[in-house]
Image (tube, rainbow, N blue to C red):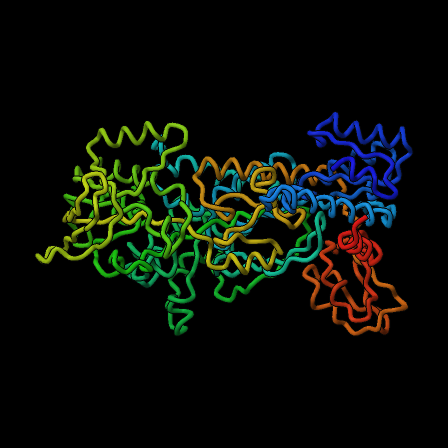
Length: 631
């Protein structure tokens, strides 16, 4: 192969080195440039996505413009996809020959530098968003934290304990929530959503809509007297924070430790909004502070930020999608998150695990992998279900003394102290049955009991076990609006719907949109420690970008040949980065800072007036000819 490459027209030096991306390999390139006066470099190795930047740097250090370099991908395009070695070798020769023909047309290019805004936007106020915001704020950056709910905290605020240490979730979370509100470098906007994102890395213009809570945050002191004074004598509205297991009034606070500690008025259930005939006793008790404003409107704010961290979280799988489990049909079938609220001291039952008729369960069945590892729902493992099932088994047994059956496919306990926690729960008397539950149906005696039917694969028999209560260990899914959020921020999604990282190993918190990072379960299912670790990584990436002061943009952008442009506007709606505008009388203009070099406009232009650096016609035509015509 090296001998063949060395014999191609115009090739002065051809070398073979096993580890070309290593320091000795790069030094070999630099030395050859100096010794032989080389003016073009071709490296035939692995993916340019992985090491093109590495070799461009080596070429630049050798005294040559880095864009006189071209890379041939012999790994994914050849070696990894063919079994016929002889044919693969011939293909490698063709690819190298084409690259040599192409690279002679390369011209020197220079990256463009743009300054960076120092502020950061964090979208999502769960534990990932909270930790990322605090990390950035503690580093001296001003952070806008945007959360759509009335309070920050996310799903973690609903938990009672955390596995495997059984620490109080609120004891860990609420100090961080309070720190966010008190931090001078954090602007916290709850009941807010991002409506529009414009601009480019280092200079994003973001429009945020703050919805009215009908209580003025600056004036409310969190005394909660308005809740007591509400004309609703009893709480009648299903409480979303408690998943409908409890009730609240139209004037409410989501949970006692909510941040901000500001009351919310629900316009969907408040009498004043529905009929205008409320006595407004809430206004009367707040007469001194005038914090209640029924005429409050949406507020639109536009902010300028240099980087964005997405921490929009997840949704719990809807167990009603598997009808044979009876969720929503049988009253004593619960989801795991509902049981989290039942065992929580601030929950609807004050921490008592009670059935809907008020009895304590004597037997409980926990069903693993509901909405995970299933061909009909989600094929992926949600990672946390096994461990939180063990945690709930421990808490249920501790609080009720019930006999607990845990139906599992495999118990996955790979984390620190996870296996020890599994052994602890087993020693406490929880009965583990290796088998997927195939059906749940009433016992038929009228007492609300149900029968769990599963094949015990260890005993080789079908078991039917009557229980008072069923806990469905539901998996984690992307949020319902994940696709809309993806389009808003112009990032990618995986096949499961989670946001897609730039590289699963080397860039797990970066997206394909420069300057936009992600953390937590919006990227994929993970537990709290992994979420916090990833939020720190995302914050560090954002910090590194901002502290650089400037960002270097690749020059492989498109540009318009003014005299040839007919002004047809075909290119404008096709650009996924909104980089093209119409100027003067009949000419398109491409903002090279916004352009990402995708080439869509180049291919679509009917007059051929749009050209792209590194993808000029001469380069492409000669490369194709090099593939088709042997040397």
